[in-house]
Length: 372
Length: 173
Image 1 (cartoon, one colour):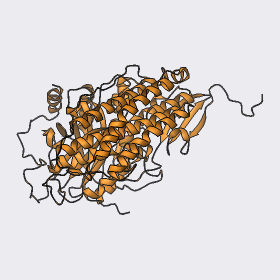
Image 2 (cartoon, one colour; image 1 turned 90 degrees about the vertical axis):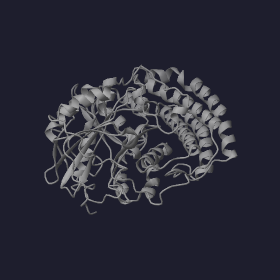
Image 3 (spheres, rainbow over the protein chains, first blue to last red; image 1 turned 135 degrees about the horizontal axis):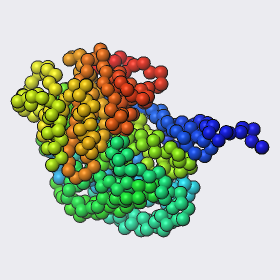
Image 4 (spheres, rainbow over the protein chains, first blue to last red; image 1 turned 45 degrees about the vertical axis):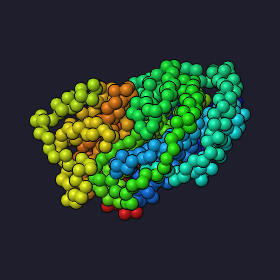
């Protein structure tokens, strides 16, 4: 025997993945009990980048907390801000001008495309294909430039205000967005040609990590994790908010339950987001972007309020318990990847380690969003 | 409608259907009310979805909790989150469970229970919803609430040797 360590058939060893491992896309650690190449048991350890946003929510006033939301999920930040402003507007009865709502939807969808593009590149890179990441980042760069011109930042946007927006969009933005849509559609075709039909890609994902609908329900999974398992659930359709009922778009659902289905859902979602952006630009009404009447001090009346939105990573919920003061009494942030990641421990048992890492990639993890 | 069905099922937990008690937490009506509010009694209240964002709001006692959660589980709700609130003036801690649905029959259910602040003990629901595991661990470390029967009640987000509960209102850093 060449190897000094001889493993008995039922003997297991502990493999520590992370917290600084490229496959975990951030500071996530998984303690895996292995039997050879097979995972016997796994325990996810999170909290390495915990910043206690919920406590910050209790000590900061409502407007001061606006910037925190985009620090949760740095890839799809606008979706989270959207949930926050919708909640406070609902609680304190602030009317939002129609134009502002349309611009919000356009921005959130652009951000969703950017987030999915990054995920696409990183996911394929996990599986060993490097060049799709470069293509994806090139397309994403266009979106970031557009968003930067309007919001002033490239990642951690603080663009939404209670009642409206910080800045109106201009003709440059509209023409750039109109140019972007056909460009992105062309790129999508390229991606499908380059990646989706690839035989190695299929072999790595097909039939891997099947998640049953029952399991999704018990863990509260959302986004592509639920929709890849045949659950037709998207907060934009199930619990319509903002101006989403005005748009004609589909929710892609695949019934294969495997990692490939989750991949297909997200790729199809890019196309659906483009449709929403297209319709939003067509329907964009004129008018103000901030309401004329707005309370100077945001003080929602005492009570308990909840708002859910569909972010790039799934159903994000935010709960406010107000005592009528200047700061929230309690602010709970329900992050979607937290529930999606929780599935991992149970479902990766018996899997080979390389399949488990592919499965982890298909969950679309952003660690600061899990840890909050 | 699933909401009506769930309401009737949950109502059975409360033997005498309480006559419309004053809506304590209803927003928008009494704005300049500064009197500290009394903790509400156990019972089921229907909320205005447009204002609060959920439909059914059931406050149960800790020993009724498993029964209530079983009802929503049987009606195929998925678990959204679990969290706590520190009502330091009442000397109580509240645990809030959020449930929602995957289908288009929109119904959000909130189950809440209140426990003594000095002796916060709630039964775990991990036996019913496996996904409650992390949520309960998080609530445990942030509020010090003990979930009896939880398989692995150790800190999740905080350091492993953390012996403080940062979301309690009397927590000083």
